[in-house]
Length: 102
Image (cartoon, rainbow, N blue to C red; front, side, top):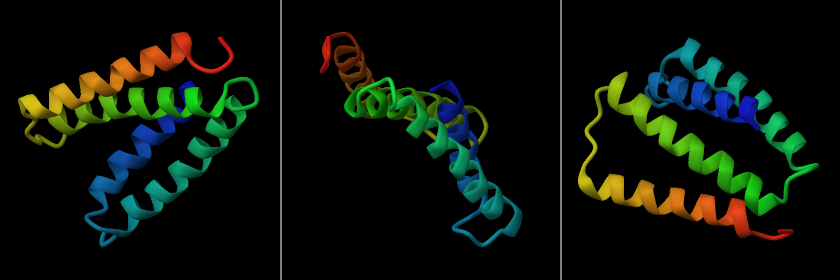
């Protein structure tokens, strides 16, 4: 799962750098980064239920992507953003602890 999250972070950052697929190297890098990302996500689903795997991948990826957006891309974040992220994280934790199969 960790490799899937790292691949998502790299791919999403390169997607931002591609400026709408108008810059070649970040565009190719984003596409290439998502391939192993999805591969490792699929591998994790051999032992983790789909809803839990996706919630963890998406939730952790979103939080870390937001941190990257703020510190690397200098994008603003407001109170509503923090509230939304917090609610998604709470959902991720609830699913992880009490979701299907627990």
